[in-house]
Length: 142
Image (cartoon, rainbow, N blue to C red; front, side):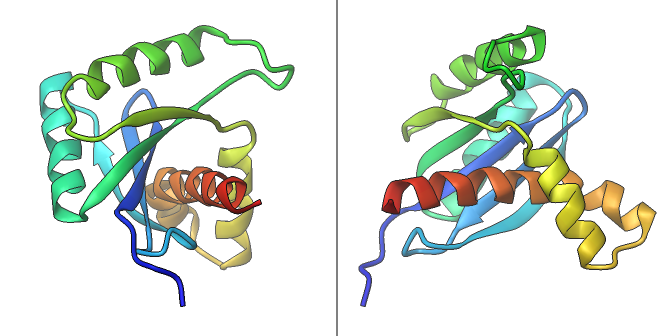
């Protein structure tokens, strides 16, 4: 039986929304949690800190949107700056994790689940965060 550890929280930071996912206590399975509407950094960071506390999180993983060839473009730089500022406000470590293809994988998963277009738009960011988190969790066990 696996021992419980502090959970891992994953964020898919977009221009208007932040998808959030959390691991189970054994850090084996990722599940989508919610979508936060972006407001101000202060409000975003407070909401994320509350999720860290509420879900007993020991690590935050932020999806780093590199280009397909691995380079760091404007969006990746924006996310890096956001993550750096967020890290200074959290009581737990934060890491960036390569998220190439997470949104397209999430879209495919939602399509396969038969969600309507309206429900897809509402859930895509949280599902993308779960894809990022599952990739991170799987990499830790291999």
